[in-house]
Image: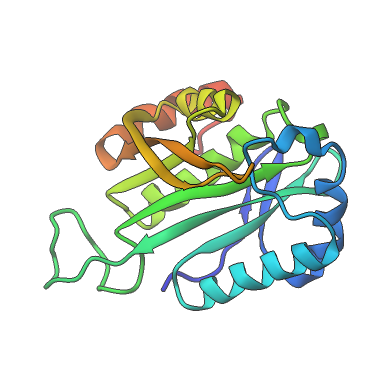
Length: 214
């Protein structure tokens, strides 16, 4: 099971999700809820506390790594995101080729999801850098084989953001899950593979205006 980490960039710091930030998350989620038509975001203190507690329970079992997103420009918690659906492929090491950790230490594949932002943080680069930090952890530290990202097929803004990362569109799974608007939604699936990451990483570093360490 991977150890909890804090991930820092120029715009954001991803901090391990905890009950200490429930009030901050409630404030962030209350700014303009009209932006959450296709995204399930807890409303009110009780819902948010339950959401955080459930995420922490999944983290303790090694299934997810949830983060609160701190926008450094304002020093405010402005949302949440997570690495989730962590899978630990079984088999004698070094299987599959390229794996470098003992079975169970770090995931073999993962999803990035449950991402939501306060209205004031949307379209600011906060989301892109948050995704970059999690992708870097997954590929550069965990050495995963694949990251999966997905969105309600109707959520064009979210899909555009995923495509802007350089993720490959894998297709639409019809009637895949319950939508945030209580419909049965079709879900667009995207992925990034380990061998695709170096080129994507280089492009994102450029777009984020980062300077690589020597």
